[in-house]
Image 1 (tube, chains in turn cyan, red):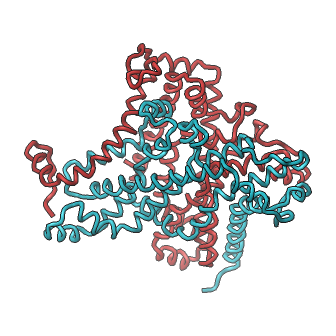
Image 2: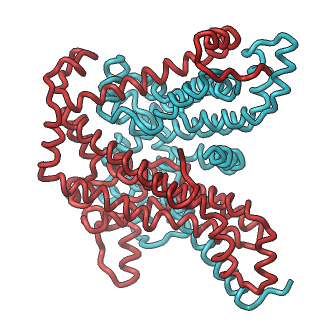
Length: 291
Length: 312
């Protein structure tokens, strides 16, 4: 079909707007990459938009990767991500399975019990005090245990499992399988896409979270990466990386260090994300069906 | 499969339990989890009406003197009450006015792109900021906002002055809301994009036969087609109106710009965790939560009356 002039103008405008938006979304990260690879003394001469690193130096990365606080933060974050994801799967999958069974007398009551927590919750203060009372203060478990089930993610898995045809579990029942066997042998393999979404959301969540650590962790050896990064970027603590720097270059060395830490922290996400985008978006779709 | 038992009679309960024992056993961890980490803190909200006693464990929530609404009154008469309320409401309002339509527009623009590959790449790129941590994003914002930062460089490029944007109260809301849109525009557009994809193609064909151009297609087919989705998302967002989280604000603000940046949740943090005014801060938080809930329920009720779209 022939397109009218008006439609062509519209499409040209459309492409322009989307291109600009893409640049806007990408540029801050490119900027961080450029700064992180820059030579501090060269960086001093640059102002405005950067299109490439000013000079080239790996010194910032060398300092960051040798820095105890950042590496220790990495270690803590890895622990949090692995235990967090494992526990969330362990808790969420059976819950989702049970709540996807239609012939359960108490199903709606239990569902209510879960959904209420999405609308009402203890505020920041009672939650904080309760967690202290459980003895979780200053423990990495305080970052994992209170978020073992995320109702939203659980509903994604449940919705997916509810879509698996009844005849499968019925015939397994007739063959004498119990619910645990049915869940493990039939539902888990068939729900892989939903479980992938669960793992990814949970993993990204744990990787990126800082506020809970800010509230519940006092000892700096237990800081997760994001909290270390927050102290460096926002609070301006300098993490003893600047010992042998002349005062003239101080600010620019610090800039390269900051951006190098940003990149080191975000790298896993930037790498994994394009590969897994399909699953992540899939989860958004399953989640929205329920509403 | 066995028929569903519907009535909660004693005989039925016994029968259902015998039949589904293992299922109930499997749900026990979930129940325990929610009791420990959601319902106990929820009950803990009573401390808003009681003078909380620290240092004696869970008893501290209940044994203190009954204060009724004293803490709430203290807050309502506080010098900062109006400022906190204003900042919270204004930030959410700007978020609603500018942040709500943005992903809808993006979804329409994406759906009208005739080049599949370009569309896919654009989606990948615009979703990206959603996955980057708030700390990193705020770190970049703080860096760009310095008087030697990128924003000032751009301002100079256009003949403006160098400004330390985060030291000047009048820029805070713009920075906060604009960066929020930047973070979420792509990811939030997914839901509208999927609503657009599910519009029946024959409607567009009919519109084209009737001589509609692109803009008319958008106004008379696309937008009416995704209206139910728009309304649901609007209700959800109105329900979150008073819920301006402390997380991002605390990364961006500083005492010199409290005038425009201090909101209820950040105040709760400072009064509670920092100053250990436990009961008072819990009361302020509860006040905020109650208003939020009322907003959600009323938005839902209005939409139910207007049409047949509602959440609950």
